[in-house]
Image 1 (cartoon, rainbow, N blue to C red):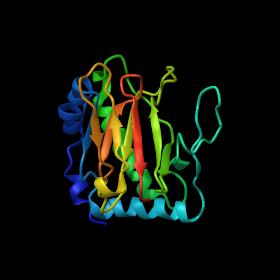
Image 2: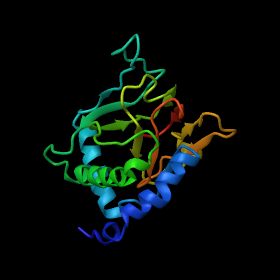
Image 3: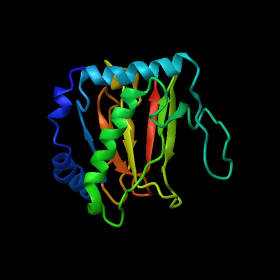
Image 4: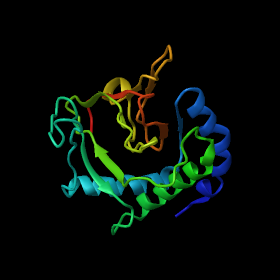
Length: 204
């Protein structure tokens, strides 16, 4: 597997000179062509396999009606991956790189010092206008600090296929539209600083 591209990434430099300043200044940032095509394809194939095998279930809503599936509010299908499952080596490799980036941010994330993460949520929006209404990942101080999303959509045309992640940064005069394109890695604060929505998607 040609890992030359990844081996050349200076993860510490990316964390300190790009991710940390962006999070503080605008609350989010993304890196394109993160894994490179070959390794990104390995992650994509594994996720497609999970999808084909029926491993993904309707995403649930938190809050007072926890555990309730409401497709008109949240249309994704998900499963949780630790990275040590059989056949998930590429996902594990991706998670290890994300872990290193966050660790390099260290004590520079304001009041946060991130020491652990949850399992990875593998998600698929099956098209048909499915999305996820405006919400906050961690509205109630449950410990989540940073949300990281790695996109796997090849040949994605947001004008045609939708699926844009729209962020409404708190106290800012702008909104941010992030297209869910293949091999893009996105970071944003998980708390009330970043309400966001997944706009309707018309392709899987």
